Structures are given as C-alpha cells and as structure tokens.
Length: 489
Image 1: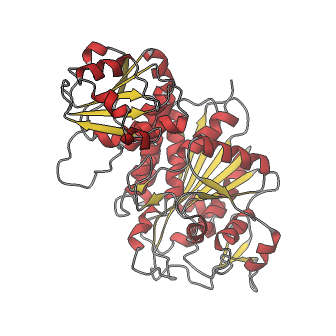
Image 2: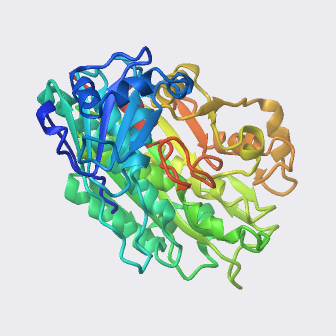
Image 3: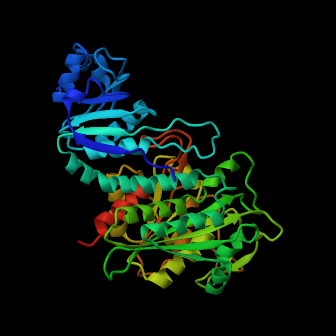
C-alpha cells in the first residue's frame, strides 16, 4: 500500500526557522497579521513577508491559498510558502491550505510554522491527502518523499487530534491504490488476498468461493462472472468495536474489469473500466480506517468480486437468472451487471446480519455522470433520517453528494414479460431505475442508502485533495457517518 508521508508535530522553535532545509511555510492572516514565527521570517527576509501581505497579489488570494517566494534571502529554505489563513480557519480552509502546501512541497522536506493555528491537524490532513502518488508500475526510480514537520504551540494536543485523521488517510490511500491498479494485477483472487490481509489489523475476514455462493443461491452475481477465468468471490469484513448492537452494513460492487460482457462496450475508454470495482474499494478503505483508529462501532463490509467478460460461457441478453432473494431477472443488457452483483450481496447482508442500516456503493451508471458530473455522487434512499445523516457527514468532510429521487412510477420501466423484472429500464432516468432495481432487494425494515459513485471514484483532472485518477471519495464521509451515528461511548 502507498504509505502516507510522515508528519511530526513539534514545539515551535522560531530560532530554527532560518536554517530549515527544503521548503518552509508560515501562516499570515487575510488582514496581513503575522504571528511570532512569521515576524521572525519577515525580519530574516528583510521585510519580504510584510511586503507580500500588503500587495495586490495577497489581496487576490483566497483563504487556504499559498503564495510562494523562491530562494528567499536570509533563509536556508529554497522556497518560502506563505499560507493565507485566519487564526481560526474553517475545516475546509485548513485542509485546502494543507493540500496547497503538498503541491509546493514536492518530494522535499517541509517545515510548517503553524503556531497557535486552531486547525493545524486539519492542515496536516489536507497535506497528507494531496501528497498521494501511485508509482507501483513505474520502472524509473522515483524520488522518495520526505516527511513534514509541523511546529505548533501544543504539539501533544495537535498530534492527538490528527491521529484519527491519519488513520482515515490510510484508508483513503488503500482505496486509491485499489482503484488505480490495472486489472491484470488486481484480479478477483488478488483483491480477496489484499482484503484478507486486513485481518492483521483486527478485522474478521471471510472469503466465500463460487461453490459457497452457489449454495447460498447468489446466481445473479455468479452469472456476471461466468464468462471470466477469474473466479467470483464475496469477501466479508467485520469490525466489532462496539457492543451488542446490530452493525452498519457497507456493500460494494467489485467488478475488477467490465467489458460489458456480450453487450460489449465501445473500445474507446474501455481501459477506464479498471475502476469499476470502486465501490468495493471504498468499502475496503472504510474498513481499514475503522480498524486503524479502533472505532467503537460494529460495522460489516461485504464486497462482491467478479469480472465481466465476453466468453463463450458468458451470460447473454435475454437470459433469466434467479437472485438469492428468489426473484427472477431478465437480463436485457449484460453491461448492467453491477446491480446483479449488488442485489445478491445486499440480500445476503440483510439475511445474515440484520443491519441497523445498509449503504451500497457502486460505479453503477453513466447516467449519474450526465446528471451530476464529477462533483457529486448520486444518493438514493428509502429513509429520510438516514439519508440526511449521510449528507451531513459528506458535507462536513467536503465530499460532494446530492440526493436523487425514487418513486413507484419508475418501477414500470423494469417490467418484464417473462420474469419478475428486467435488469434495465431504458435510457430515461437510467440512474434512478438502477436504484429502483436495487430497492427491490431491500427489506422494509432496513434503512438503506445507494451511492452511485461513477462520476467521483476516478476523475480526469486533479481535485482539491487528490491528483488526477482515483480519489478515494466516500471513505471520509462514511467514516464520519460511523463516528457521528454508530460509535458507542
């Protein structure tokens, strides 16, 4: 797994600033007020900091922005990064500042003189998140990333506040790594092996093979993978950090590669289908985060791992398959395979664990990208309170999420002449009919959220906290949902 850069928190030492190597960062308020460290650096640079804080360049910068001065006189550092932040910044501002510092930092050592900044831990979190690089398959020797030192007035307090954030960062990195891996590396077997290794962190792991899935009746899931040489699997991850209460269930779509099956996708862009296991990747990242920070909650993560290939044994359009629930499904389009995986795993999660709530995640439809672009995941739910709790958690972590409608009228589009339902409802409202399909596999007593993350799991341009590619979207929001709603005292 890609290891987050090391962050250490130390007592502020303004006498050490002149000799700090690599990159040096100080904090200046939007009004141009300098703390003790910034005043010392201003003297060392013969007033350069004060001149910057009085300039139009500073006026145009937003809170959280960083303005860099290269090779500043009077300092050993090759770059002086001046961070524009109020003394009591918002979480968003502090994390954004940290992410901007990560871009300035590169592979060099970074010293941040944060002083009494109230969100220094969040600044460090943003720095770690944006410093991610996936280099596993590059043969050129990449330069090792040096760590960062954050000078603060109360290092022990800030370190304690940052510790759970760094555990979440590990989960985000785990998800990004999984989504970034090519499909010839991250096969269903390799995926299951990486999840099995999480037992070292205290998670209870079970891997169900095809024979066990057949016995359970997961024929919808098995039908998706029957054209692949990679065996289909379901991995169950349990974190038992709470009491006797029912767990929260997280269910993830893990299609390690999606050709579309017999309903073959166009060649252009098919290489991106290595990320079609993004839902399972997020579930895995959340479970790792919970274990690393030893969350006082009961959570079960279940992922269905399959590969959708156009082999002579592959399911065909027009086939009818029977789900674990017992419902029959007419397969109109074999490229609508994720819902066939999820419906069986969701039913299994409810049948075995009777969860207090269930969240499924999937890169499910292109339609959600047409509707919401790459800024928000689509959120569908049968329970207003549960949904609002998630939306609040996502907003607090800066992860875009937008609630979409459900309604009985959309069910008419799934009617089949020969089976209980079709697996697609046509082009109109494609993301909604997919959610309606899944809702048929949710018991009335189960609060449920479906997250369509097709637009946010992997993106073509950098985001505030990630380079282009895998984002790890959802790990922070779901960890926050658990922290706020499911942890025991």
